[in-house]
Image (cartoon, rainbow, N blue to C red):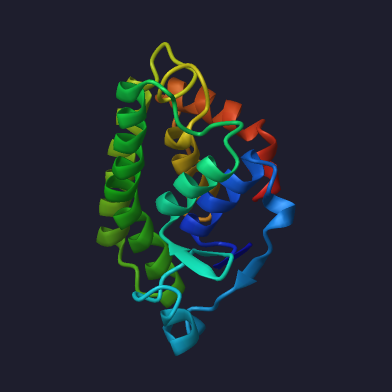
Length: 198
């Protein structure tokens, strides 16, 4: 088994956190695929859109972080990253999609704008405001809870770990006005998977 990706890619980190949670991180080497290489025929054969991550297993390729994590959860069932209850399982799917739709666009604006050196003040302010809205929603949702879904760590929490790790790079801090998110972040930081994939 191999994972094709980039160490600082949020979606690659998401899969590597899952591998760490499953005790598989050392068994699945990360094969670095640069942005330039991702558009070459070899990688396009793995992922038709030239994206990362991609998991290789027994000569087959599986793209997209959530699909990979779904496979890993079946491949190594314990500890499970999905609840057995059907409703809670659907909630995990919601949070994973919310993570993609709400947090990825502003993060890309900030990261790629800084990389290219063309991030304007108005773009930065808008992206930070959008992320602020995400974290405010998370704070309300975490009220009285240790985890986003049910009473244990799931893909819902895992999906946000790589974003939380990126906050310093994005020059963002969680404000004091978000006590539930701050406490949740502190709990996630204590997991061995957090430090293993920093």
